[in-house]
Image (cartoon, rainbow, N blue to C red; front, side, top):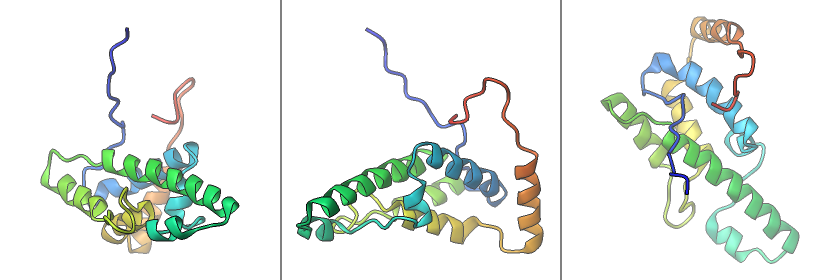
Length: 149
């Protein structure tokens, strides 16, 4: 029998503002690979638990379930991507964890969590945006490298 080994994401967010640009780009890329980016970007809308429980249309129930599963992947990915060994990372973790609601979103709301991180850490000036864009343009994937890690 093989032993279970937990994989820690290679791109954890430290909670430092200068690390957000890289983390944000990598997280969205990973979410795209896992097909959960639509929830984060708002392309699809996550219904509240009471709304899903009240739904009677079979097609809508199926769609809501798929969106809910996308949300769980995205939210869980954010939670485990927070590096909590330093105070700054704990602050970022608490922003994400604060997007859980026992009534409406018991397993968390990935869009709300992502928006909280963006509001707190995303660059606000054109200079910082250009710097981030330059950093992205310099990124490349090594031959045979796994883009998901």
